[in-house]
Each structure stands twice: as structure tokens, then as C-alpha cells.
Amino acid sequence: MLRLSVAQIISNISDKIPFEAVSEDYSFYLKIESYTSYVCAAVHDGHQFRKSLWDNCLHSEYDRWYEEDPCTKEMVKSHPIVIAGADSRFEYDLNRPPEAAIYSDAWGKQLWKTPLSEQEHSRSLSKHYSFYEVVDALLFQLEKLHSRVIVFDMHSYNWKRWDREVPTWNLGTTNLDQKRFGNIIESWQKKLGGIQLPHQIKSDCLLNDTFQGNGYFLKHITAAFQNTLVLATEISKIYCDEYTGILFPEVVRRVELELKELIPLQAKEFQVSDL
Image 1 (tube, helix red, strand yellow):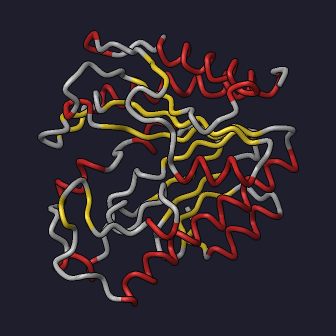
Image 2 (cartoon, rainbow, N blue to C red):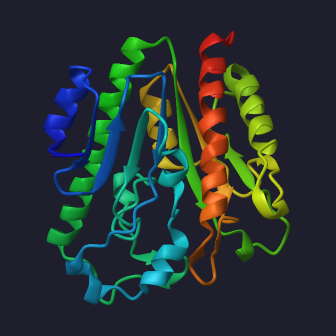
């Protein structure tokens, strides 16, 4: 594991050097074992929250954890390319555009006792900018090496907050070209729906049922890279107790093992598909 500046990370990518690193400011993680045609991302996995914000924040650590996507990096850690946020979305949200990335309120509750200073605001936004610099460099390189690239954009959501039955898996596809990618989306939906989970947990998968795939990560990549498909893949938090914060490691591990098999199959299918 290395600690690298953004410039060093981008230089490694440009030279197609495999590496595993955290960014110099510890705001994100990137592993490249080989320059494959697919990427696994967990932009909301992070829980770090810089100390200069603690006293000004009205949300508790649990409040923040509840809205983050814990273990989503863990679920895809075995794949050759993994990029993940390390900071909490309450500091800045990598799945929102820069102008909306820093919350003033979150889920109906004011976030800050007093508005953030310009210095604190800029410090957070610089991390957001650096992350996307690296994302763009990575996908630019991968599109040069492969005819098409697929990004598995991993998220989780709190199923107990819904007042109706919701699926274990949700794919957000409203911002994707259905005519071009419809068969790949359907194939991924079937694979997720066939996963075997412990404790008789169901594994159904629906499209745009709880979330529609409106995140900035997907939109940014889709707009910037013509031959890259982003699959916004949400798992309900069946792998933890979202009310107590207790994680179920045996469920996380099963998800990881299932995705270890299914993600490469989907990536290969995408490469040979007739688009």
C-alpha cells in the first residue's frame, strides 16, 4: 500500500503501472492490479470526518453512519480495480455535483450549527475535485485499452425506513441508454436476483424501485465517456442492523463471494455483447 499524490496516481495510470494506494490526504483509495475492462466503485463507503468539523456538526456519528454505505468496498475488494471514497458523504458527497456536494442539511435535519467557513468549504471541495480527476484519468486510460468499459457503482440503502416491501437489490437505470444497454441491464438484474444469501434472506432485484440512478458519479461518467456503462447497484442493508449499527460479517462475506464470481462474468458478457 502506497500513499501518493493525485499527480503520482495519474502518472501511474498514464504509464499503466499496477499499484494500490491511498491519496496523499487519505480521502480516497485506489487499487489497480491490472488494467481490466471493468471497475468497482464504492463512493459512499467512507466514514472519516475531519476533526475541524466535529464541534460544528449537529448530526451524531451514528446519524452519519446510517446514511453512509458501509461495507460496499468490502463487497468488491477482490476485484482488480477498486476505487472508494474514504471520507463521509457528510463532509462532501462524491455522488453529487460540486455545487451541491456539501450539505447544509441532511435528510431533513440541519447539519451545521453555523454555516461552514469559506476555508472549510474549499477544503472539502478540493477533495471532491481530486477524486474526479483520478476517475477521469482512469477511465480515459481504460477506454484506450478496451473497446468498452463497465463500472459497477456499489451503494446500499436503509430498507427499514420504507413503509412498503422493497427489493434486496435495486438497479438505477433512468439515465442510461435503454436501447443500447437494455440487454446488459436485464442480464445484471437476473444475476443479482439469483444470489444465494444466508439466513434465508431473499435476493430479488428490481429496476428503479427505490432509487433511479440519478447520482453524479453515474451522470458524470456517462456524459464524459461514450463507451463506458455505469451500473448503479444498490443493496438493501440486509447485511447489518441499520438501527443498532451491528454488522453481519457472514452476510457481507457471502455477498463478496457471490460478486467475486458474478462481476467478471457480467464484464465479459459486456465485452462480447452486440451493442
